[in-house]
Image 1 (cartoon, rainbow, N blue to C red):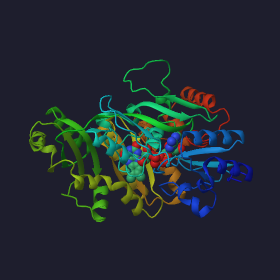
Image 2 (tube, helix red, strand yellow):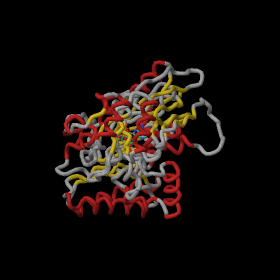
Image 3 (spheres, rainbow, N blue to C red):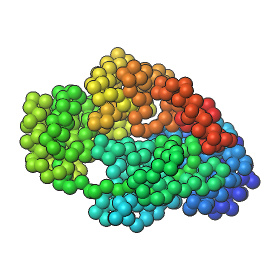
Length: 454
Ligand SMILES: Cc1cc2nc3c(=O)[nH]c(=O)nc-3n(C[C@H](O)[C@H](O)[C@H](O)COP(=O)(O)OP(=O)(O)OC[C@H]3O[C@@H](n4cnc5c(N)ncnc54)[C@H](O)[C@@H]3O)c2cc1C
């Protein structure tokens, strides 16, 4: 009974129009399986056109106790954007993709309003058209939406420079589970009137409200960028190189790490790797402070090999950005994907421990990520299906043991819901549950995400 009964479907069709309620499994399929292919649920797919329709849909769902999973680009990597598999309560998959308007850039106030369904690429284009930039970027930019990015508090490749998505949110419009519309929409850099509800919705993963519009902070576009691919013997050496470049007065726009296993995989898939090295650092800098090669020379023997190009250096970035998709195609079983962070002085330790764990288990490990943030994407390939939960649990415990976080930037979703206790203590979890109950007393918002039990 995951598709709501005929009366509810009729009411939903009355709100959004017949063609925007999908109940045929074939037509709805692409919405109901997540990007990793691991999570598939059942639901009626509903595609509202604007905030008023979202509010009416939420009122109808609340009145009939229908569960709702909001969805943007469906590029999330933790099973948060599709209904819980095997859960037979009536369910609506609420696609926000039609809310894709990007407003005019306010060049003076350095901000832009965007609908929840606007893609990241469309916001980048609007900002660039006004000579500005949006401070968050990630490889899924052509599909990931602003609503999904706020809901997951996405990090990405520029986080070292501009912070996470939460830090870019100046205002928000969202529909509460009751259907009431919450709006805080002022282009103010400072506004301390009570609780910061937009910040609370950032990272809420569809469990508190449906985000419909976001007022985004813009930043000056980076000038005179340069990109270096640097071969180093290990991760610790790559960290020293990054610090040395920083000490030379350059602004670090991105500092990404790729281990040998990932570079080899991507190179075998046809992307050019400039040299053979244990570890590859991709570093992008901005500012007119001379040749980046000179700063690399100052890093001494930590640099084994290096190539430097003027930005945007798309070919160099392709080596890094091809990782997620290439890894997904290269495993004989679904990839065990874990997005974790550890204190900066423990990153080498984590990478070594994961490699040892994989070798002992006879599986392949590919590790890469956002070095400047201590954020490593751990991918275990060819793990037999029966061993996947144990493998994931061992890595997450290892991360907790190193003083790290079991979710750096992808969120908890359903994939890590059972492990929340490894990242937060009992009082903390109880406070989060109290917030959830206050905003969503009937528990209809994305049940199973963040909290395994409702
Ligand atoms: C190739 C690739 C590279 C990636 N790189 C990065 C990276 O560098 N950094 C990073 O952080 N992530 C990365 N991701 C993960 C993903 O792109 C982000 O999590 C992104 O923010 C998800 O946006 P989305 O629109 O696809 O959201 P979805 O996948 O549709 O949804 C994700 C979560 O947000 C909720 N949600 C979606 N829209 C709304 C809304 N309007 N209101 C309320 N809740 C909503 C959903 O219920 C779900 O819980 C990558 C993914 C891929 C495939």
